Length: 376
Ligand SMILES: Cc1cc2nc3c(=O)[nH]c(=O)nc-3n(C[C@H](O)[C@H](O)[C@H](O)COP(=O)(O)OP(=O)(O)OC[C@H]3O[C@@H](n4cnc5c(N)ncnc54)[C@H](O)[C@@H]3O)c2cc1C
Image (tube, rainbow, N blue to C red; front, top):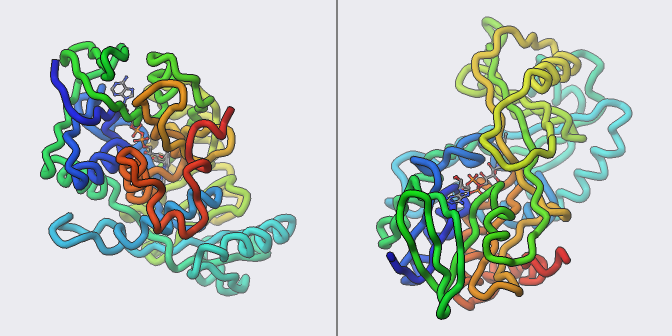
């Protein structure tokens, strides 16, 4: 039996960012990961976009608070930049103009970089848009491409440096509470015990919760599909922003000389090693070709990943009221990478009795907004 102060289950961005902040508070941490390496599931399958203009307000707060770290990480944290300039452009057809205007107003509360642009400017940003398609647009020069691997590895290096251990091939199959400690049994890696367990199991968070007897949070994993296809010959696509439909029915962006696109699908599925479906790939082609002169020819690469939500689409960060020492860190939806620094910091602070960090509290987010009890 191996013991520590806090046992974290799941070595994706959620578990490792929490560990990164916890070792700074002198906690002995062990992270248990089912797969043979961290990052195999959602964390390794994102679209790698940082934008302060995406998702419900609480998620946008977490992105805003994470921004300074991701833009300018502490010296020695990483040898490569964690983010690269990209920009985002939200577009609207004539029937979507009111939606875009309303969204811009709402988003500007937290974003200093989003503003409406003219239709002419929109076509200058992405000349591949079909003439007549765009009736209104907004531009965000603060949106960035993220190097997700560098961000994840930075947390992993940082938490290992602080003494944390990541045990892979360690699927937790049982959790029981005895004498003030959680005892975790794993399929192949032995047994572990700690007074506190952090449930950072991504799409499997409710499965894990069930093992403790804690009431579930109603987590719903949703499949999202991404393809990468060739850019039109002879066109310099690199300066294009990410182009996103204001109703989130598609987005596309340059990706290492090719084009990455998604139909922004949200198909509810059970937690699993999810794979892309042909019908979703076809949907991407249909939507991209409807708004632009791009032709989706041979698909170079495609993948699917799970974005997991609870009913209000906010994250769940806090101790379970009905299972002592069991802490939820789940429901990151489609924002888990860009919010990771603030989410890890908030989790670490709540786990060690510090309450919601000042930077998050200043943007009007309370412990009750984050905790699981709000869902019942
Ligand atoms: C297509 C797509 C595009 C996205 N784009 C973006 C984006 O542009 N920007 C952004 O910020 N976010 C984006 N996201 C969302 C982001 O990827 C997720 O919010 C984030 O990765 C969730 O991280 P996690 O650590 O909670 O989950 P995961 O990375 O899935 O990690 C959970 C880990 O727990 C492990 N685990 C589960 N059960 C057990 C068990 N019983 N024992 C041991 N280990 C267990 C799993 O193996 C897994 O490794 C996107 C997601 C998808 C799918």
